[in-house]
Length: 115
Image (cartoon, rainbow, N blue to C red; front, side):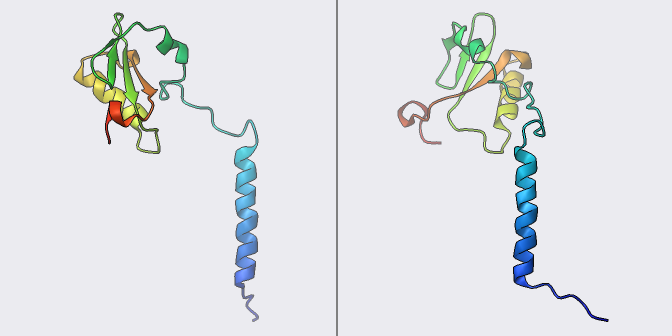
């Protein structure tokens, strides 16, 4: 019985084909999963612009209609901060979670400090 031996070159060829196929599959419009607007709370920027807010500190603003805007100076990179932080703030302030919005803030060391 003759066993087929795979060389490193064969492995690289197959890996390249599989990776290229995955990249093509995920970049074709219509194949991507739709975003969860309920979890990405900064999808509607007009919601923020229309607020006349009272700023409690550099991170939290509260509008007269009880909407809460949280300023997050660092972007979401996999920790789930855009979901967990509004939940925690809403729980601590006894607010409705639908009234809490997280907004990407500028990274300003003088205003937000080093985090």
